[in-house]
Image (cartoon, rainbow, N blue to C red; front, side, top):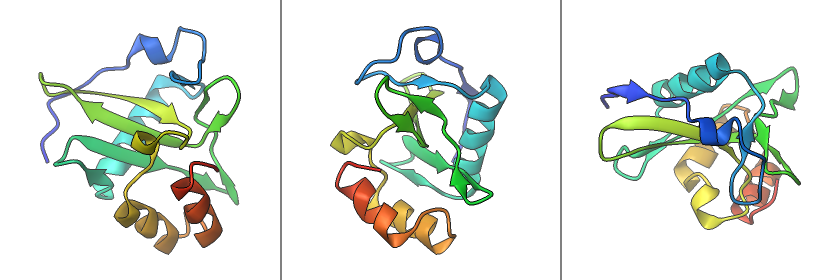
Length: 126
């Protein structure tokens, strides 16, 4: 998988958090680091057009952002028609904001999430 460019998108940094637009609370560097980890671990789907990432440290998931009412603990990265990537933290409320079963199983196998957490993510909760 080739990545030409990554762009830190201000609409997920400077605007107010909303149900349909989460905002990062981690640094730009952290956002890009998670993007790389998702790519390295193969958490890729949709014909290489979506990368997912999550971080679990010291028994806790890193809170990456917020939608104003819920903490976002996963990140989703997409690519546009110009091969430019950008990402945003997500809460798994909408169907498009849930990683594939394969990715969730890999996260579970690596100890990043538990089986009950996997079920909750699939049902749109955390």
